[in-house]
Image 1 (tube, rainbow over the protein chains, first blue to last red):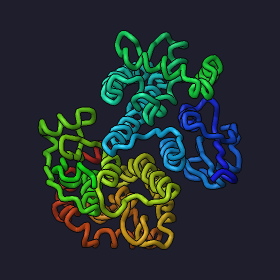
Image 2: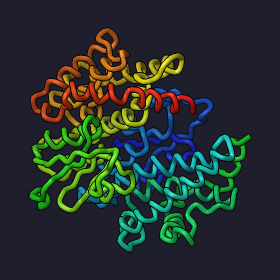
Image 3: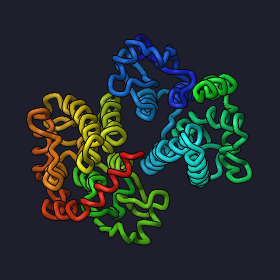
Length: 225
Length: 231
């Protein structure tokens, strides 16, 4: 089914959610047209393709839009699951349930606490965010140990669904480190995650789509003004 | 044939929870026998705490020695681990749509919907408006079908279950009507079909008991709503 299969991704270079979608596309070796959105002046295509949330990323496959990052990643995995393309979700139903559980946890607990930490309106809120993110990261350290079973990734020998979901935050974790000196994945507290961060970030498929950290720092500073 | 299907299935749940209900409906639609273990959430059992140490919540599905948590994760697990009619659509795009709307219900719809019943004054007006906008989007998704899944209930119907047996009870206890027949005729019809489905009947909470449960907790929910809206 070669001819006429068109993939387009509407995104914003600084979004960790868009990064997740790009990581999935990259690790699955898929070609696509990337469209950079100006979030202050959203395109007609974006507004029509995601009328409910009006957010990026949006995947458009042969003209049909798919929205919500985790839905996009699962869709790509299901459509492009054959012909030697790497699968992100495992085969066994229980392993799949574990992957979905931890992906949900990352968005539910880690994301909210990182946001509270970075963008809290008061010092108390930011401190609460630091405390919560510290707890979430510790839990994820245990999750990585359990899921990887001694192998390099949540997905085992190769990058899997949870690696891609957490991978969206790699750039953000690095800028928090650069801007505040705070190591979210501290090698003394969460050694397995710290090693995962280095390992994941050094993969060619990840480097190909990772946004420039310095540029993200500038963006972050602008938003805080 | 799936090797694991012979192992016993237990579901740790609590009365009145639409999240537990989701797991029960999935098991029933799939034809999987199970034992329901009801928790007293004010005094959680060791079984629950050991099997859901991360969230300490229900439902928790126990399949042999495997524990699966988070209601929608459980529903997909049931769909994949057991033989029986599929809960999610077959086509990947339709699956993506079902997951998108389930995600919408979970992350955008639920909180304002809940707050709309228990809040008051100006704050209530805002969440009622938001909820009606969200209900209109769900109404449009039914698009002439009996269920979100088509002729029979599927994944998205399961995700939307709170719009079934709970609506009438919430209206009665709070006096707030959101899903009215004028604005949302398709959703009202869906609620009738869903609530009267013979296949799902054993999963539906006893109405009188649910009314008593919400009445008993009314002041607590109102306090919680007030706190949440003040943030």
